[in-house]
Each structure stands twice: as structure tokens, then as C-alpha cells.
Length: 509
Image 1 (cartoon, rainbow, N blue to C red):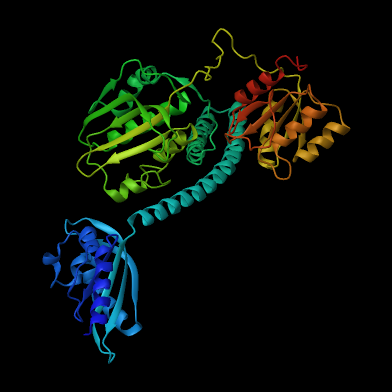
Image 2: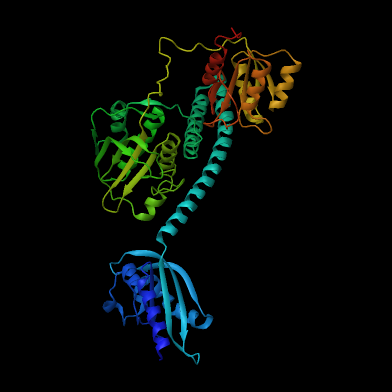
């Protein structure tokens, strides 16, 4: 080797040794390590004297070694000129990292294989980001699907519950009334499931108000104890002077009860459930799922067996359950997760096998602009709607339209019908104006929100009820002030109250 070649080799060695972000090393024809750079020591944890002479399969998982992947890698590199793949690799301390691996064959001047050059790069962060993006896209797609399904089911349940309600009122025999009552209860359970689907997809209608977490938990203590039974104890530890949070109190109660039941199910032989709350601050950039600010962290901790990493990763996926067939819908935690996201908070699950599970509800602290709305007191109930009303019913679903008309006529009201927003405007323009309009929101061509705008522009004093199972009205719908919202599915009493509220102060009376 002449002086020029020696200088080239020295520069090459200096370059390789200066690289610390990549593991760059040489293998002989059999796959045994013959050189080791500082980047390889930093990445894999082995010093040069510890690894030179050992086979490179040392870095592979047991599964990959059993599958013959190290031998395959060398064979592909030799036959095709390069081997490149991503996969798990093992450090000296036993921890795993996701690696990008390149193996190139080295040949002498005569073309004879004398070894391999191997480059390994840790791309764990890149893979984690890709997995997070994929998971977010998957959950968004599932959310859109479940939201659409929930809307369709809500329409069906609206028709079923309304028809059963009228059938029960008209039934003569008591045994028939009992059968109808059973059917009503079943349909109501279905309505609860659709609410959970809507909560997961963040389309549930929420009443966001300031809530005192301590008072809420205190008021639920007896209910929780009756629900979980005597084998499980409940202990509560709350920091002093906790501020109020922004959330829907009814949905938070449902979420908390769900978490407590999950905690009980995780302890079949009994134990203790700890409920705690404390004020925490999230600095800028610390948590990607939460904007910076103050939060009350409400936690539910159990002493159960805990979850492994795979179960924990899937815990908030809709329809995933470990409770067995017929014992769980797999919608409880997704509902809680959706509620937290929709109200500006987050659900955090912490668990390990043998260490129990802690579910944390991060609830944003209420601000000065958050005002507790006035709630009608028992002494000031909403009067029922007058029976001598003419109501224009607008819905593109024939079953829901027929059911709503049936409920209204059973109350003694006159009805007009339209199956679209355009048809409703024609009816208003060509006939006698009704006393009130009730319209569905999710209709093709012209939504209920758009129809409300058109009616307000042409008939500003005409009361309107907007029936929908969704939480939000899309952007661009404009101001819908004065429109009464009615959640689907609704009962005859709820329908009557909504009409009465819409008519208050108007010309209905």
C-alpha cells in the first residue's frame, strides 16, 4: 500500500470514527464483527472490545433469529448487491429500538466477497410519529363512521320509541303494556349506546358549564357505592380550594361512573378504588394533546392486575373490550375519551401488569367568562305546549316524519308535513303559516340549520325547533339564536316541552 492509499484509508477511518449518529461497522463473510465505530457503541451499548469477534445476530430479536433473518440479510446483500430493511434491534441492556439497516457487500479487486459493510440508524422517533399519525387517521375515520351510524340509529330509535309510547297509551290489556314497556327499555338502552358513539366521535351535544368536581363526586358517592357493591371500597382525596372546571356535569358523572365500574371489574376479589383530584399546570409545548393552561386532574385508581402494553394501547379503541362476549360494549372508555376531547381536556391511562390502572381526566379550569346558566327550578316548570297548535314537521326520513306527526296529533295538534327544506319553504310560501316549525338538521341539499336561516329571514316571528343528534352545527350556518334544540331520540314529553319553549313569548299562545 503506497502513501496515497494510506492517507485515503486514514481519512476514511477518521470520517467513520467522527460519526456518532450512525452505527458503522464491518463484518467478515460469516457475519462476525471486525470493526466498530463510536456511533455503534453509542447506539448499541457495546464497547469495541466487547463486540468484535461476535456474530452480528447478537443485535437481532429472538423472533428474527428463529426466522433466519440475519442469514437472509447477508445472502440478499451478496446476491443483489444491497440489503435494506427496518425492524426491531436489541441493545446491550436488552432494550429495543426501531432501526433502519443497510448491508453492502465488500469485494476485492478480483470481485471476491471478503465481507460486509453495515450501517444501522435509530429511527424510533420517526416510527413513533408515523404510528401516531396512522392512529389519529384511523380514529378519525372510525369517528366519522360511528358518528354517521349513530345518526342513523338515532332516527330509527326516534321512530321506535315514539311508536311504542303511543302504543302503550292505547293498549288495553296490562300484559300488552308490560311487553311494550320492555321494548321501550330496550330501545332506551340502544339510545344510550348511540350517545356513547356520538361522544366518541365528538358529536354529542354538551352543556359546557363551570362544575365543582368535589361537589360532583360527593353527590355521586352513594350511587357509586350501590353500583359497585360491598366488596370494593371507595376512598377520595381532594386538594383544597380546587377551582371549577369546564365540562358537561351530566356527562362527567357518566364518565366517572364508567371508570369506577371498570375499576371494580378489574378487581374481582375486591379491593379499593381511589378517587383523587389536584390542580396541575401544563406549560407550553409539554403535552401535544393539551393546550397550555391550568387543569384539574381527576383520577380513578384501582388495585387490579393492570394492562399489558397492547391492551393499554387499544383501551380507547371503540368496540375493544376484555370483558368477554355480552359483558361489555367496548364503548365506555372511547366515550370518556371523546367527552374529554370535546370539552378541551384529555383522558390519560396509566397501567402496567401487576400494578393496577389509573385513569386521569384532565379537565380545563373554568374562566371568568364561563357562566353557570340559569336552570328552571321545580317551582318554575316549563308549561306544556298548547294543544291547539298547527305544526309544520320537516324531516327527510319517512319513519321519523310519521312518528313525529303521530306524537303531535296524539297531543291534539294539527300537522303539516315536508320531506325537505325546499318543500318546507314552498309550504310556508303557498299556505297558511303554522304556529311553529320543527325540523331535522341532517338533511340533504338544505340542512335544518340553513332552513332556520331562511325562515328567520322571511318569517322572523315564526318559532322553530331544530331536532338533531349532533353536538355542533357546522361553520357557516350563521346565527341560530332563538332556535330551540331538541336532541334525538326524543319522547312525546320532550317534544311537547321543546314546542312550549319555542312558543314562549311568541304568537303561539
